[in-house]
Image (tube, rainbow, N blue to C red):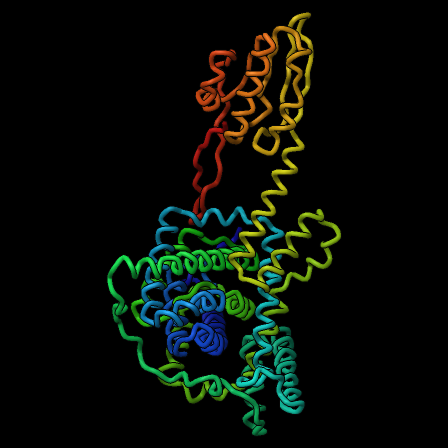
Amino acid sequence: MPHTTPLHKLSLAQYKTEILSGFTVALALVPEAVAFAFVAGVNPLVGLYAAFIVGLITAVIGGRPGMISGATGALAVVMVSLVAQHGVQYLFATVVLMGILQLAAGALKLGKFIRMVPHPVMLGFVNGLAIVIFLAQLGQFQDRDTGAWLPTEPLSIMLGLSLLTMFVIWFGSKYIKAIPGPLLGILAITGIVLGFDIDIPSVGDLASISGGLPDFAVPTVPMTFETLYIIFPYALILAAIGLIESLLTLNLVAELTDSKGGTSQECFAQGTANVVTGFFGGMGGCAMIGQSMINVESGGRTRISGISAALFLLGFILFGSSLIEQIPLAALVGVMFMVVVGTFAWSSFRIIHKIPRTDAFVLMLVSGVTVYSDLAVAVIVGVIVSALVFAWKAAKRIGVKSAMLDANTKIYEMQGPLFFSSVASFQDLFDPKGDPDNVVIDFLNTRVWDHSGLQAIDTLADRYTNAGKRLRIRHLSPDCQALLSKAGNRVELSSEEDPEYGIVMDYDGRLEHDPIEQT
């Protein structure tokens, strides 16, 4: 699997591509950060500072070069009630605590559990997020005060320019390699609007993005347990949503660029970024799939593009606000529509009738919950449903082969996993009353996965004991033997050990194997 090209080996043309890609991403970050700040009920600069700080730090030390982070809607919707009830200073304190929790997740290597997200959940995640991005753009075609659709003429102009932007991006990406397609689209439509003096909404109509450097300040909240009681639930939810979205985006970008990313390193980067932004008046953030897609499609593959995006964004705030505020929103909407096209897994329509019905259901469920609720809930629901489906299917694999060793001895050779879902089937495989006096159960081809499995063996031992039969068990691991304390006086257990198995625990540029014994 190829890795990202080292920075010192990049050519001048590649440097130019990375920097232009960062410039394009910075332009797309402005309206998103402003909009999410409005959603959270804070000043637009709070969103812009978060986009700059989170974007810069994660670009420098994140686990996936080329991935873009900033203020996101998934976090903003959680912040609304906190800001409304307690004020923006409590938000800053919450963001700091959120970062600390994410640092702890990185230290404990919890990011490795993202590999437990099944592929149908990933497809549902990208499809649902594509729909969310699309729906978010529809607000640009509505009156900001009443929420009604724009009148026919301005609506037609907005829609036409957005579609023209999409065409320029497609054409430029295919035939013009010197400038990233999204940047070419923004420049072309801005030139048309300014040249023909077309009256349509621009970035400046959202809010002024002019400001100074963010100032360091400790959040002015009481340092009491009452404050912790208020902010901890929000911090925990924000940390979970931020890491889930960041790690899923990391996996998606890794697939698109045919490379690997470090999950624990990304947790550490996100945590560091949020701690810092909380002390500098930012609303916190996480990875942004839309801007990450823009970066990848524009040719951004290294840390240079992410760093450039953050620095360009700061430059817009400090020096270029008057120019950036003239960019028509139609151009940025067109860019985001192209992100939707590139993000949505269109192949899911082709395979939906070919994959198992349970996988198809999970795919559609996650997409729907992502749109209806939020990403974190959707992923958790998808993983739970997938786990239950797996448990149900695995339970059907329990089986046994039996044979008579002699006139008074019968052997059962177990097959398949023994755990909570297969316990009932396991009990039905045996006939203590009809079996001979000596019974042997061989667990060589069976893994006992949980305490329910152990209890099932113990219960079976009781049944044979009550029937006056002698039961011997072979190839049961030492862990199970030690835990079968109740059955120890009634069942003969062999001392043969199962082999050790290794599982890949994390990826941080290398593979680590932690041996675990199967019980």
